[in-house]
Image (cartoon, rainbow, N blue to C red; front, side):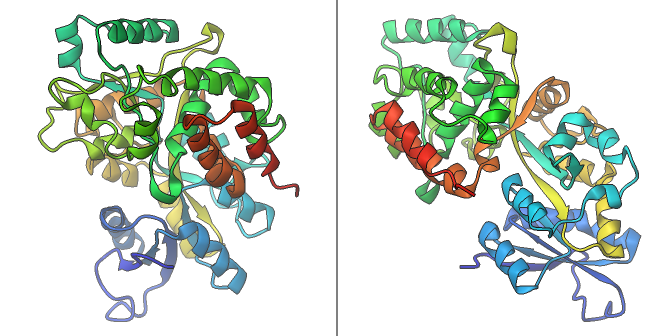
Length: 415
């Protein structure tokens, strides 16, 4: 069902009204509500400078609606993709326009850097222009509570484990974890596995796993689940035990960090968790984060990221104009001013971010030497947003590790 659909002209007018003679461009995306309002603000400057009206349609059913519209021949000129896997499918079916036909050589790499260029590429050709990003490899804590307990921020996984043991010995619960998300239950656990894979097996093996060059039953994946299970399947280490993990929503999971006394002291979640903070939280004293520490020193501290990207489905002058605009820094500077948003654009000044937490996250993004996109978003939907999610719920609930991984592997499409 198409939910929360909105039609927006970014200059606030009706394209069939006084601007009837102006060219238009159609954009389909997953941003709705406040996100769509912010997008309207960004489009407004483009409309003023280009003379092109933007008609934006936002839907929470984007992954369902876009393929149906493509099949029916009702193709938007531009789409805003929350999952690169869908973009990859449309490239392979011949429905996407490569940006090397649209932008001058080097434009995207100059704007976003080699790693983000690769994340938006299929078969070594660029198709995605990144609109915004979130950093997933973050562990949140309360500096006030750490100071009260005499705890220091761990810099390795071993130190983080030792800190957890100290907390348990003091009668405290180290972690809050919540993986409930309705039909999407389990996805926060997949982020854990992806982060651990990067820290144990490294980015090359991670890429093989995401591309199914190695199976889910591979020993490297088994080991990642073991690291995760040592935390979430130990009732002393997570608030509420496994039942608490699978029944607590990802939106609410961080809240016990801020109670007095705290219900937990650590919470791993992406940068967007700031939108779920209590309204009265002091961002300078009550909350901070550190990067999820390395496990194998040889693999360092890679960043797992998510994000949304613009892609062209019709090669029109209007679409080319919009893509060229979003390759410049101007719309990205507007986005970061809204808050709660990180830009992968390298020319966005850290000074433009509205708070220290966002600036610190943006600095991590700019300085990272290894970046990988959320693996489940790159896998076929049957797996990445299907059995991988549900399998993690089963694993946290106590199901056998090898059985869970075998079931996920069996679900991978054969073609």
